[in-house]
Image: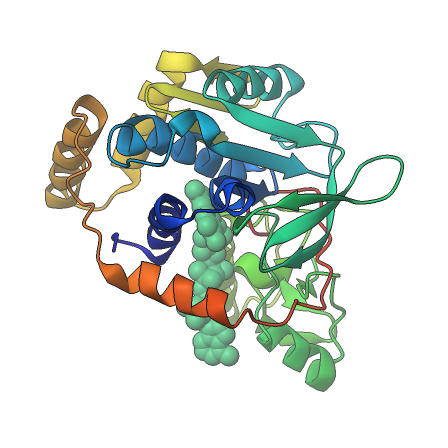
Amino acid sequence: MTRSRSGGRIFGAFEVAELETDEQRRAAWLTFALIGAGPTGVEMAGQIAELTRQGVRGRYRNVDPAQVRIVLLDGAPRILPAFGERLSARAARQLQRLGVEIQTGAMVVGVDAEGIDVKGNTGEPQRLATMTKVWSAGVQASPLGKLLAERGGAELTRHGQVRVLPDCTVPSHPEVFVIGDLMALDSLPGLAEVALQSGLHAAAEIRRRLAGDSTPRKFQYRDLGSLAVISRFYAVGERGRAQVWGFPGWVVWLAVHLVFLTGFKNRAAALFSWIISFFGRSAYERTTTLQEVTARRALQQSPPPALDQSPQADQAERPS
Ligand SMILES: Cc1cc2nc3c(=O)[nH]c(=O)nc-3n(C[C@H](O)[C@H](O)[C@H](O)COP(=O)(O)OP(=O)(O)OC[C@H]3O[C@@H](n4cnc5c(N)ncnc54)[C@H](O)[C@@H]3O)c2cc1C
């Protein structure tokens, strides 16, 4: 088993493919679909591609890395829709170099255990047989939003976020602040920085009120820019009109992550671990047990019923 559950599912898929005798089913085990081409989907596609090239080659008898398909799908006309067109095109080229298939204008309208249904701009949905799907097209907000809507009359977005006033309070409820991912304000993205800054804003508002000043202040988000790392030594990023890509982009990505870590010890530990993983070729965290494979094969004996929901791939973005 690997460090994480998603890592376990991906390695598990290779393990099952190794044992699979039916060609079509093996192909489905070796197809990875990423639904949503925002930063999360793009980063994940790049990681799976690199993993396939480095972590799979020579480790299996029946799995040929050339058979692995990594398909990145998005309903929007281009990947990384929140980034500028030029960066989006560069990111697409880098992913294609890594062997990732990109399907844009592709809405995923059905998901079940053995594949997905993809609707293009025209025609009937097409089936893509894939045992491993990664949903990177956004998350549903916490059920707490629904509670606020029921009890406090708050209005919700399609994703269950609470629409707030410019000072981050619920309309008619100045005593209730909604911040972070649950807050819907000015189409702000679901990012950690939005959560941090809106939290600081709410705290400052409360402090001012306690000091006797109850005039509401507008929350002003300071955009620090966006970064997406696509592969080892390749990232894209932008801040305002400034754009960076390739190796310089990767250096910026590295520096930003180090700066935002708290404490010298954490930074030194992260740097050490990155040096080993970026410059070495070994996947030392990887250990495989029978657990994942056994569970997968047991599930195959009694396949679960198809999911009846039809998730709509929205304008993919990091969970918002
Ligand atoms: C896969 C993934 C990758 C991401 N990558 C990035 C990235 O690279 N950069 C970036 O800026 N952002 C990223 N994000 C987004 C970022 O994680 C969120 O924007 C951020 O965590 C939002 O913070 P939050 O405090 O609003 O919500 P959360 O971090 O979700 O915290 C909410 C907390 O409230 C708890 N909670 C919920 N309901 C209740 C309740 N009723 N009672 C008590 N507790 C409750 C939850 O358990 C949770 O601990 C990523 C998100 C995901 C899912």
